[in-house]
Each structure stands twice: as structure tokens, then as C-alpha cells.
Length: 212
Image (cartoon, rainbow, N blue to C red):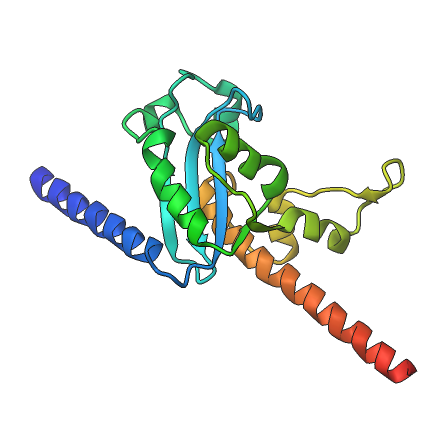
């Protein structure tokens, strides 16, 4: 029974990896959604623990835990995302995933994420040497802030909200701080936010036309 279970698990993993590889090589992956989990928030010293990338159809292009090469523990971060040293000890290092990540990024025309511009992209540039140069990005966190409408008088801008708050706003349930769950939630929120702005523009154009 144990051998059968091992065999079935092996087949499942192999099929999953093959599917991801097939999806990754699809030339239609022009819009991707990216998220990472890390040992901390310092882009200069912390490391990636998990990375997930999907396309705008929700197909998984990459989903992997990552073995850090400098850190042996990250207790504060572990309390949030529940990724332990034990969980990643046999995972590939980020250097082993670099080529695959870069291929996906190079093929994309638009990269979507949540807190993407101020965290995920700078983190991957610094820790893995991924080149995002000249890539168009869409940070759902920045786009959602005016929709939520929590204005900060002191800074003269709208407060950034977490992905959990954004997802809850649109009635989407997920397990936060797992990067695969997060990219799926981000894609859902991206579609909602994009629709909001597109409809707002249509309303503005209609009002202008009526006024004229």
C-alpha cells in the first residue's frame, strides 16, 4: 500500500510538473500574475521561500517552494505564512529556478501582482537577479486603494490595503500567505478592479457626451 501511494504521488507530481512546463511554454501567456513568500521584508538580505506564477486564465506556470541559501530560520515570517525550514529543505534554490522565472517574465507583456511594484519585483531583482526591465506592471494594491477609499489626510493619498481586505471586498475567500492562493486571489481582484475602472471611464465618456 505504501509503495502504491508513493507511485501514485510520483505520477501526480510528474503530471503536475509536465502541465506547468506545457503552460509555461504557451506563447499566449502575455499576462501573468506573480507572488512570493519570503524570510522577511528586507530585499537586501532576506530570501524567497515560495514563488507562484499563473497566467490570466488561472493556469499555473510555476509553483515551487524555495530553499534559502543563507537563512536557517525565519520565525517571525513563519508565523505568518507557516513555511518552515523543514518544508523547504529539499526544494530548489532560487538560482535553480532563475532560468524558468526569467523565461516566463520575458514572454509576458503585463505582470500583475499585489504590492508588486514595491516588494515582489524589487525582491526578485535583488535576490535572484531577475530582469524586469521595460516590463509593464499592474499593481492591484495601488489600483484598489482609491476604490476602497480610506483617505489619509496627512499624506494626501489613499491608504494601501492588504490582499485579504481587497479579496473580502469582492467576496473572494482564500487562504492568505500561500503564494499560489495569493496569485489566484490577485487575479480575481485584478479582474474586478479593471472592470471598475473600465466602467468608470465609460460613465465619464457618457456624461461628457450628454453634456456636449
